[in-house]
Length: 68
View 1 (tube, rainbow, N blue to C red):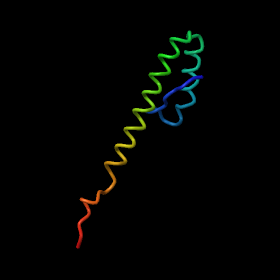
View 2: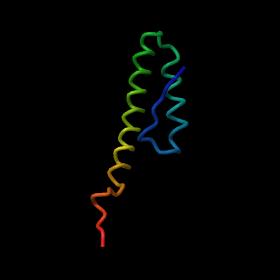
View 3: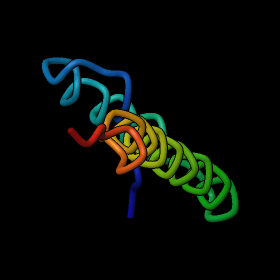
View 4: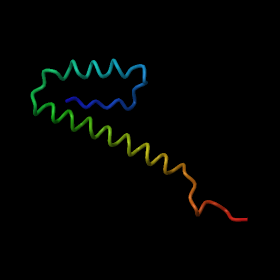
């Protein structure tokens, strides 16, 4: 199983990035692949958290809404 984080890549670059990732990782031993997979999962989690924080920061809050 391969986990490849594509955050930061344009949609048009995604396929190339996946193919490069697979080719470069096919010969990895299991321990090396676990380390790389963990890094990729951290990248995915970081990207999701960043997007969530940005979305939350843009939402209006009750304290920010002024009553007439």
